[in-house]
Length: 347
Image 1: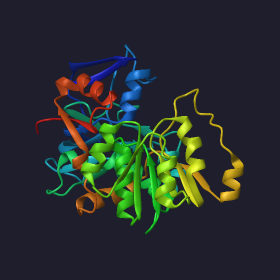
Image 2: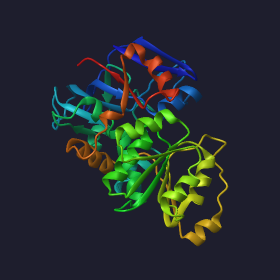
Image 3: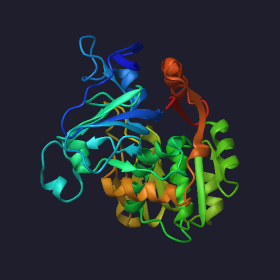
């Protein structure tokens, strides 16, 4: 089968490798759609300890497809079934796993991060992931490309729960990439009165307006425009959907009294110590938090939102490539051209 393997920093190669063999309790997924995430880009730019020249890694963790085989003892699934996969699973139980937050456990494993992932024609779904409930059937009317986007939308939904966005809120999203626009879609779903999308990239802001004419866009520093839009009150919810330290500092300054600030985009190593004026947090009574990854509950919820048509995600896809073009696809995503880039397979 063809697969995109990461050997080291800036070294990804499409090669023919053996089709995975599955064991008891495992599932073999025939990939139909796999989308490219910022994590994949960072792994290529900076390298990853689980991807070495001696043991290259098939990256990619946003996936949907058809079950090709089931191992002995698998009774809940059958070959030919359309599914999407939550990539994070826990080989060992813990207090966090029991509480439904196994995605925060330091011992978690992830397809495309620790095990071979989605940028391949077939993916082995380990027994621990199958038993934990990481395989989700998808309805016939849901496309594979939409189902592969359940994973990033579930991460966004995790942040939405922390933000407690409600009817009439003014929401400022800093970053107009695919994740930022998912935040915008979720905020509108929640009844936000104003959904403001901010970026330094005019092209992405233009795409945001095309997706939804109700989105208010601001290019560059949002301070002056936000003041006009809110009568000087600031934003009730601010989400930093970008890896820029200065915007975390700025978010605190732009928040309204009793505002909620979500640090969603992680920062590069060595740049994550950020100056915050804690008096602003104190006197405005701000809630400042961050979120990462998603639980299986978040995954199921967002699959339901997509299946029911409450949220459309397929219009975030602006580029489709074959597995042979995987390197070019990741390079395009790295250049922030368009929005979501995906790899499509024949099934």
